[in-house]
Image: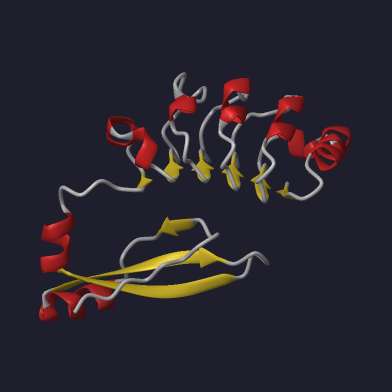
Length: 180
């Protein structure tokens, strides 16, 4: 019998595997990962996810809905719901980002992005956007097209120090939590 853990409405970011858990997992022939999950109040929740080697082998060729590899995600973009391009030394959002029609979460923190292309705002299913630790100083008004957006992370960007820009965003996105 297989067990599945489904987390909805929460963007999950993986952390390194804790050494003691890794040793125990090796003894049991299981892989254990510690993941970091945040609820809507930014409170950290820790979850242990255990996956047997059998499950890993079975899923090896299966397509990921949560991808950390842009090339792999691009192979089947309509299946991708979460995309993380963290710390990829990007200077801009990929030109073909709009092909990810079912994307609900996009994370591009720790890059060198200065501008956000308007075509990103065609992704109507986006719930979370993470632009933390980039070089963004303003965001186009077209961001208001993202009616489902619940969380917008902008901390560590020049825009975070511009109260007028933040106020403009709050008016454009009244139902979105803006973290700056």
